[in-house]
Image (cartoon, rainbow, N blue to C red; front, side):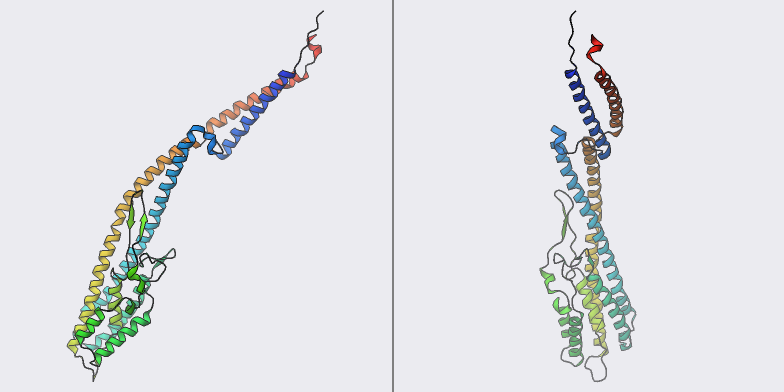
Length: 336
């Protein structure tokens, strides 16, 4: 009788290796369920890694533009609100001058109060600060546009005093006020050297939303309000006449109106950027959705398919364990 020698070593090792592979596959599928990603590293995607990396880069760039647009929209909105409020404040003084009785010195005290209240308000608006930046300071965004009310008041009080005493004529007074520098108005002297403020909102598009307090209406408005707030009606012994007082008040109103015109122009210019922002934002949002879809399709695991694979693999593992158990219980006696 021939005795057949049966070895189960090779079969057992093959079964063990297969079980290890199946367990490793199961662990990876479970990881995909937990992370929702096909692979942990970019290298795992093989030849698709380059496209995925490029799409991720494009996705980040588009998102940065959308973030810029969001921040810019907020800043422009606040700037427009401040400019509208400034306009309303100075218009109160203009309306007061318009309705005042001509040549009446009795109107000056009430106009001074209106002007002073408006001046305090406008100074705060000119120094509007958002996210650590002064919005009306141009590129010099760390320096307040309006810095010293005492300087403004002292300069106007001196001009008015010289006019009342006859040191300066009415023509000289208005000319001196017209020539007042930024520094003499208590504003930051560095404003004149401040540059533009821009934000990149696209690959080749930078939006300029610069409004500087020294050139876009605020300076003229502060000058008119400061002039009126420090005005004095000629009294007994003063040189100017009632007609000259009226001329000065009308000059103040002219300065204020010029400031309003410049402010309106700036508000229209900056506000007009909203249409461009909305159009560019819509394009970026469409691009973002497309890129997110591409990245998601490439990177994200199909959880429904993964669950199905897990269930099938669990069934295979259970059967394999049962077969391995049965095989391991066999002995040479079974084959004799």
